[in-house]
Image (cartoon, rainbow, N blue to C red; front, side, top):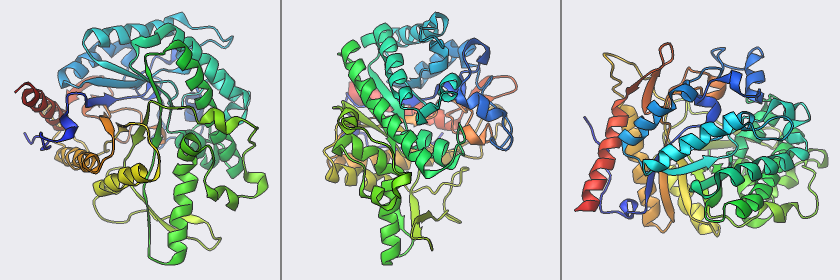
Length: 449
């Protein structure tokens, strides 16, 4: 078995560095009958939304198999588990807690803590209750306040048992993909919709940080942002300008409000009718002090300027690609992290998602995914290289613990360290899971020595 060949004498393996795995609620939980509908339930029912016409009604049946999955986490030897709480599972439409739904997470957290695992909870991983979408969803400013109320109730109940709370996961996906391009739930389109939804998501984050500080003073509080570092197709002035424009519009739109109390200059390229409605004081609310920022990295973007003077992403047509068609460029991860470190006054960082969908085949109860092992190895080294250049990175979470429902791709793409037979729900360790475990075992042995 090929091991993950990571340098054991690096800062990465300081005893405080955290290695973990991550999942999200809608992608693994199933048990739709025990919660309210989310926007993804309704989106999956529409035609031409999910590539394989599936949904998350059962997913990985994690609600019923959570103890087995906790055993997987423990057997992997990771330090921490990052998962999300399903807003529609823990809240009722009247604003009261669904006690049965919350009890599931309380038991999960208590079990993880008894096993010595750190708990990283994401409070919004895109599964907005449908009843709120019926009132306008993230286009309705009130949803930001409803989110804060939900976070307050969860904070009161879970408190400091949770090591780290993440308010939002990738507001880019929720706002841009869901409300501007329409390829994620709820499937709306238009620049105004995307910009307004994104602003209300960021406002929700700031409001949530305030209430979590009240109820969970000992827990770390942050947000998870994804960035695809940008590169110009050519060295022409237009492509270089398109690269800056695309990066600001797609990714720095979510980072700048947190750290600069402003949206990036690309906002000036939008017509007044396309710009979000921003009320006085909003930017100060968004820019709450953070204990950490989670960074999700998968690939880079290559940009060119189109005939309308707007950026365009050039899809990779060759090279080393994942099953998602994403280019594998670990050095871009290092460059991104170092650039952020140099350009912003950053809080500590976690790599909260990093992984790859590969063409996995289960043969004789084994998945020989050497390609995924190589992916993890190269990207962990990319993290190490960034740390050597001064970037304060406190941990790394592999995406994902399990194969799962991959949003608009349904079950057609597999990111997991653990293979899931969806017909039987049987779990099988992939070679990458064994390599990850062996790497963590070697780290433990090295630390003890």
